[in-house]
Length: 104
Image 1 (cartoon, rainbow, N blue to C red):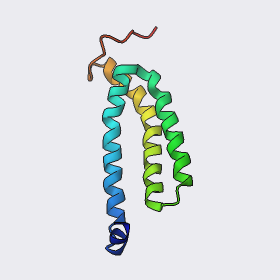
Image 2: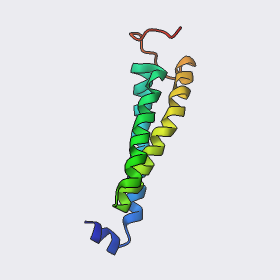
Image 3: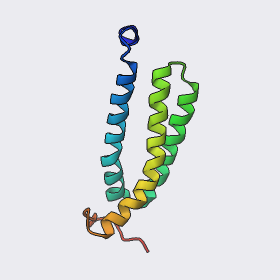
């Protein structure tokens, strides 16, 4: 499969498509994480980002390394977004989880 992609110069398009899908996946992940766990979930994104960073620099496959790097930085960006999502919930743009205890 990779030979076909490289032969027809399609690796860049594959990386672009996967990047689009990864970023698209993180949008609802941030919303759900804030809804169910609140901003306390930031550390999950940090751990996932660190793991993906380590994997990105150790994997020999270039395409997989790139996609792991994209995932790592999407995780790191999600840390910022989880706090922004809390503000969006406070503004009423997204629903609050009525079962979650309010922070003190």
